[in-house]
Length: 212
Image (cartoon, rainbow, N blue to C red; front, side):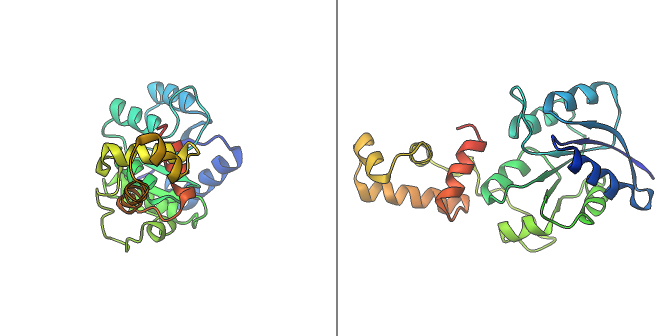
């Protein structure tokens, strides 16, 4: 069977590479190429396809990142979706998979993963690329798990992460919230542990990408 695939990425070179990877062994035919979330959604209205492969970060008018994935799930609940991304953030990976995405591959990974991933997602199986598995620390063929997302944080933990990502130090946050320095520090550590984040840079990226 030759699968009909819709591609979305704001970089033409990436679109070309994806098309070449899918053309091997006549596995798939590209029925549309979009360079923005809005263009992808417009194409899907009039072009049938068996799967969508999309970048996570594309400039748009409100359907970027998770917003696009949630909209795809709402409009096309049975359509297999694969995400390719330059992100290397375990908490964001879990948020992405939580939208119903079946495939997740890092752009730094092996392009040969893409055809294999397509076969898996059209069969309603989850496929995580090797680089994604490495970041998450999950062996191949084991589920990613549902813990380690925004839903696991307490309101106070989320508030502390938001304040920290806004440029406030732990001391600033303790002073602004009226909490003890050790309490704020511990809640920040707890939030990072729940999300599987190891660096402060990952906090900034997580909060920014989720539009928090």
